[in-house]
Length: 186
Image 1: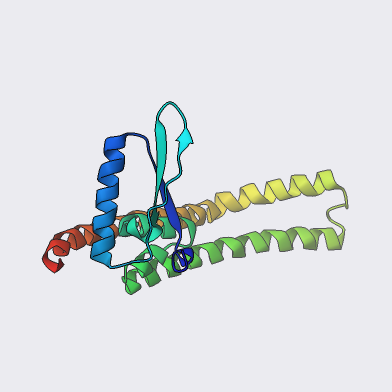
Image 2 (image 1 turned 60 degrees about the vertical axis):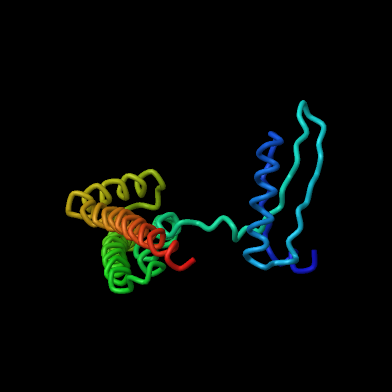
């Protein structure tokens, strides 16, 4: 258990005895191939209708596909991060810069609206009434959206979606190449 503590373990619940036997055999074969003597089979019996046993295996024996990893990175981190993971650095830079530019321009327009409203408050044109200020914010926001801020927002979302779909496409392509070259390397 000394080296096994360093690795995350994934537990598979196996109810059918046939599946338990085949999983034990496959696990032992993988252990011999990987030459990892620290791996042990960890069984826990629970009383259900059938006997349930648990087989402990290291988390690394279930690798995540590149397409899924790249898609998650592009979806939740930033546009282009999936491309960066897949070693497509130019594409990553293009998507990241496009997203930052559209987001920066959108924030610039929001700041202009905020400055106009604060100037109106400072000069006394707009009274210090929350209802009046909220109405002015709504009026200025709709005017800004009409003037083109919605295009910037849609551009940002479109850039993010294209980066996501393209990183998944490239990941699937690399997964296919890895599947073809894996039998030759074994």
